[in-house]
Image (cartoon, rainbow, N blue to C red; front, side, top):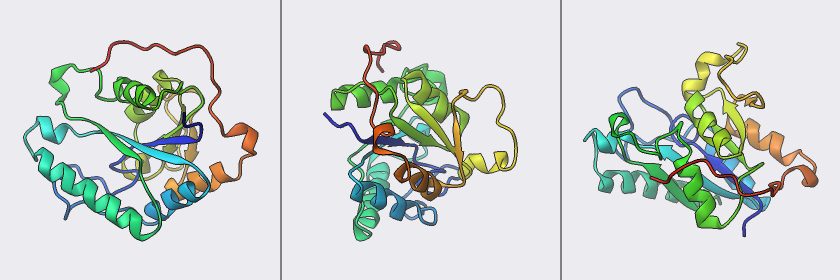
Length: 202
């Protein structure tokens, strides 16, 4: 069982986001310092998993081959700086399909917990939008907002009331990693409680 796990959003957290969707490997561009930040987590013994809405699939904007190419580029660039993402969990559905895996629903996080056989209470999750953090919090994760991607518009502002109350805020993924690696070891492991049930799987 993995005890040192971090769950990251993708677009706007690891790579540049786009209102027109990231549709190809050429359009997948890492944010400054993000890949190096993931490598630092790995070197400190952390496992990293991605949970990402990819409704561009359901909308017909790109296909699975294009998505796989994006992730192949991500893995290759990560490898070049000594980093690694263990797995990518994504929701392929459009908003009108009413699935349980599209964030803010917690289905992707439930899938991650099942894959790794662990309770997610206390696991750190990082994203740039409200729905990222709502999904993680519903699965028991500790939510972290980064001021990149969609989170840029909240820079210098008080978080709206609909954000989870325990949300931590960081400038970017590198700043989150700085914070996490500075925490005492006793505070960084997931706190295992009774299994947290949040509904059906997608």
